[in-house]
Length: 230
Image 1 (cartoon, rainbow, N blue to C red):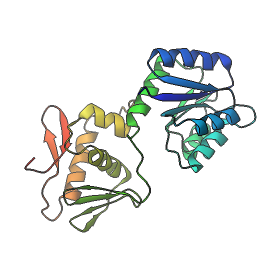
Image 2: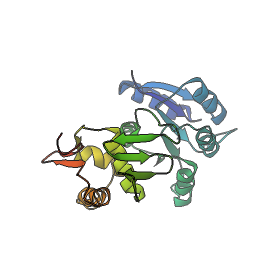
Image 3: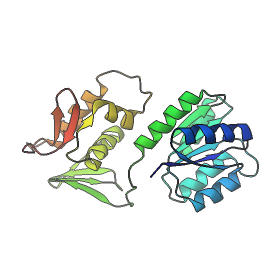
């Protein structure tokens, strides 16, 4: 099934451009011309991504983002704005937006951000309080806590996200590029060994006390969550 994207913007030129461009890339696209219409469209569909303009009549993008998150939806949100202001970016992220693009933007950059957000979207959102299990390792998604052989493992936010990704994909080899994109974002430009550092810290914490290694290195490719015996 094609990913479904909702574009909410009061600029008809923008919605027309994005409708054509996203459809050409293979996405199903629905558009709305204001915030109220966008909220109604969200209720009528279960989109995979929301592209949301900030400055709109009736209900602005900030309010739409806030209501979407208050409804419990985890749909990725890419916000568009004509203001290149750090305070606006912080406000959008605090309200639950996932990414931010300033107008005027290059179409290629928007498409790249759309692809990245869709790849980072989980296949399904776990219910609050649910847990993931692998071998003797438990990941509590509500408390954001790991438990190994009955022992609580304290993780940083990035360590938790990294372990969450592995436990969503047990026994599946994840390439270095996939992990970097999902955890740090497609435009990450930090130190080249940051992933190796986090893997080492995660191993140290989860293997404390002599527990067997679960995160295995696949030389020249990436990493995989599996027991030492397979």
